Length: 325
Image (cartoon, rainbow, N blue to C red):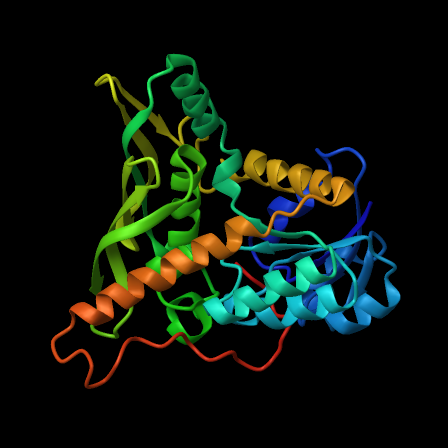
């Protein structure tokens, strides 16, 4: 399967390495605005500075989209219009209406639209999920923590701290991974309460989100962009009182080290979905709708809500194929 990558930021290195781990896939083309980002791929894969040219010339079977959040909708839309299955970094888009339009386009064309929730493939999270299943008692409550110092993770990609480009702050960027972990353990959920803390620039840096599944299980998601260090973990309480936990960073010493095996899982499952034609659009739009609901609830709780209305999702920026970190 000939696969291309659009956007060669920091995260792209995990995708590139995954091609060495996953059978039956080839990194056939890469695209980025920056010649220096393309330089290491000269002679290894076809190189492009415009994703539309890549679409027209590279003869690809599928594409990974790794550009900044604000251009996910444009790039994914162009790929789907060209008949190509898409694996896109979370979030699916910065606005719910754009995410829904992508889902419609993918389903109308019978194409795979796969959002990359890399924590879904974390070895410790999967081991915890298996322990829960083996125990047999249903989940009563769940806590997912996603805590980090965003400046360490963003590096030189300052768009993370631009709400118009990121789609918001910690809720928009870390929220989707955490919400997907909740869905992985207890199925579809709805937000029941949310508290958001913003910094002096208006960026949401912390959030506590309460959710409930259709079966009545509850979940708490804790997000923090100002946490000293990094903590990503899951705690589960079962109906019989049993407490189980998993550290998603456990056994992976060093910054971002767990991502190597997680992105191999992403690429493997995306390739399998493309081969089978499986509809994988639900997860991406579900996470985006939960993000939007958190921001809506925050806006409604503000003094004077109704006078200035709810927070609106950021406008789409002009199309670009720049790198994602």
